[in-house]
Length: 444
Image 1 (cartoon, rainbow, N blue to C red):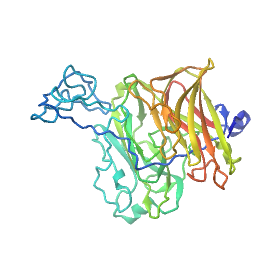
Image 2 (cartoon, rainbow, N blue to C red):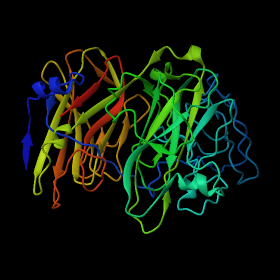
Image 3 (cartoon, rainbow, N blue to C red):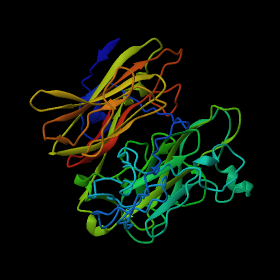
Image 4 (spheres, rainbow, N blue to C red):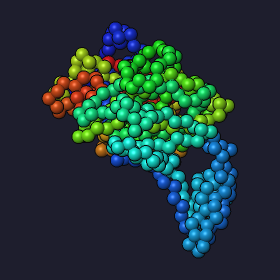
């Protein structure tokens, strides 16, 4: 296995892309595992006639709803303990818990909301109706649905049918359903089996809805000057909703009214039957006056050089990249993305003083990892076989750099280029969210 570092400044100038240092090649990969669910079920425990608990609660949840201020009462000698208050039970401890007679039940901050999939009543005749999400109450959120509006209308269904053996990354035009500007912090997204990635982008120029799949206005690099911002997206079929840490309670993003948008949908069908390219995304509102800071999308795209210098069969190499940090701030989230020939994806924070800290790692392209860096999330520890990350707030300083690398083994008989093909293409892309520095690095 070899490491490669390449001085590509001249190439960057030739491409006229945004300034970011480089050390290698990359390409984009990810494949969803629809059997893996990142969910937590909030179950109640039993106790000896637990009574209603009480305690201090926040005025509002991040979706604008008012939490209960006390747990429900238990019943009988083996009654179910009271649940409901954000802080309930004796003394109001800092978690959802049972009433005074029951056992305390803590929420997992990494997956605080129950898995919402499977609650729809649709019967499309295609695989994975379980992926459907029920739309939120319009007072607290909105839903973006890309897929047939009527499963009994062949013209509608045919726009989204995907035949066996097909793979593509194409876009669908839509407008966001909000009639006025809204702000949000959290979301959940669920796509049918075959979802590899979804990149949702808002544009200044209007688009025409309802025409099926079209060419994308941006190739995924974020270099189109017509872009307003990105909407939430996905690196696998299901992206769970997460809690907001207290230090980021004032962090949010804006969605203009009825924003013209495109969904860049990379799907594949390695089955023997037809599937649908379809997803549902629920976005949860927060009050405008709550949002004091706006996060920026981290976009680290490596491996574009594979377009003209493919990864030849038999190659075993670590491709390395770096993105300079020009302002003080913090990294809120990181997400790795590569394809089936990717064996390890690692990200580091290199400090101006010379220290280098590993902050992110994953191995399985079928289960791409997303890690939060805050005071309420405990990320898994690093290991040689499973994904992991450091825990806690990840502060950065001007002069630091965000580095990442992908170990690629091309054990096929096909040269791999930077292309949206899970088995015959590769990528080494780092995504996420930052506060302060703008980390948009498109690197050959």
